[in-house]
Image (cartoon, rainbow, N blue to C red):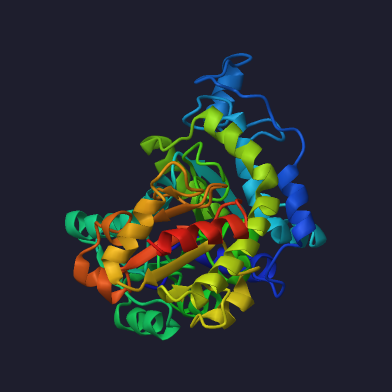
Length: 432
């Protein structure tokens, strides 16, 4: 649907001038320096903020704010809070430092990307979608998390949005669906996807979405900004569940979304304001604290994950291993092109199928093992879970099987316990 987004042409100009980049990652030392940051604010655990006078209150309600403050962030915490504002700035730098650098070189003063933090990752996804979707629209969806899948089916059933579930690991499938359905206005992908860890070529897909004026929305949760920076690769919107690698300690729930400034400020923020998917000040402060060591933490997790994946691939009790950092992974070359390394997530099938997998997972439900049977990921604690009956149980079984989410698939999130501890425990569980 050409001409759908009034901000599209300006975004395309800025996107190719400032956002896309030949260098796919921010230097690790610079990344860690941004994470560590300076000036972590005190907790502003309050719902409302006093004004100097009536003129100050009126000015803030139309979006005016003193230099250095985000508009609306000193009115009412549903509209913004200093703790959330600080976290939004840090996440913006981690995903977009190159945009800042490019703008400074060009003496560009106007903003290109906006950043918002939410009460959950699903709040981020649903708010962004509500910021643009209209009756009669179409959305292409790749292999996604169970609740994202469920949300898209809800939009299809309740509001008549055409949703096309495609295997986006082949960019041609996205291209063909865009050509067949010109009313498609967005493509939503996860890469690596959850839980089969297949990869989408962001750069290749972005070329097709740009031709059709369709937003490319990338859920970057499994990578975090440390492993993958989708704006450099051609994404239009980047989404995170901060609950995972940003928190890293399973202590809070939050989400984030970043995208074209004009779109976010004029379309997404009003939905954010009225729907109220706002994080608490304490959760934003907590995530600002835990993000300080995220790069160091993730580097250790990813190193261990590669070792564990290699261990499992050689284990006689394992049928199949999916890990993007293994040469045997079908998208290994894409991993090398767009990710810093293979990540901290592993999926595998145990010989003996579902029953053997249940034995292994129940072993880790015991209190005397260095892993937990739990559905989250990205924590310093290693988690193991069964996608078909847990995180992806809302997806119809036939669709699950087509996507490779079989009843025998096990998902493993690597923590910081170290290779010897995790591999010894896995070996003990597999020998049951």
